[in-house]
Image 1: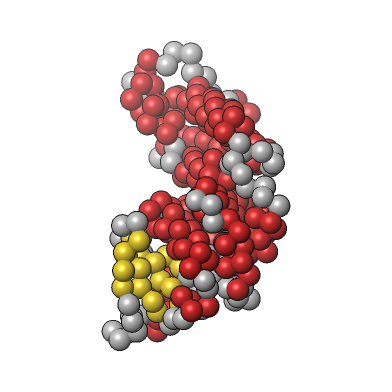
Image 2: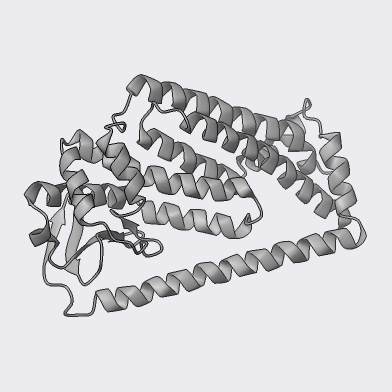
Length: 307
């Protein structure tokens, strides 16, 4: 039993080590000014997914007996073996479980809080009008800011009176922004990330991935609006919709990261550079594949059963 625990901990130690390398590379690549925000957003989505989904384990499980070149990392293996001895493993497991439970309770509380907002915002008579934009249902409700609600069948919620507050171009710009959130299933992606955070709460780079995803999630939607020649309208719309209160959990809103987005839009620095984005994507893909290959190279021993 002890050997199985040691092997499992060794695998995840190596996996997290190379996933961390990918995260650092993502941070460096996305810190470059050039390149589209959409590319940077998917880089961080991939980075977060790479932490939670150990693709190397699937390769190891299927082909471990054939990976003759695979060799364990002695330094990591020795450290893990020592950590699984005696009370050390029990203390570490207890700390991890306490943290994971606390994060799960936090997540459930935030989701319940959002549901309370939904009940207030969308009572049976609260919806005054419904229409469809680019295949996404849109309705007006008693809420402070535009938002996308729902996971598998998202719909856009617009505040009462927003069509009178904004002119036609501004209204269209905000709507286009929210449509991108809805069609991309950003709420579902964010929920998956939150589940990952519950399990890997102790890793600072997982928290960083969430913060960067949130930033580029909004900027990438702004890019779509700019490509539709509504950039200036979005700037004026966001200024009118500026709200001090933060967005409701698991709802993509037009007011998220408002000051940063306004600065980016006004400087017109969101114009995508296709060549830079392509180079950035190729470099990141190479790093991810390399990280998985290195993980496989040093963890196949965990899946080779002794006869």
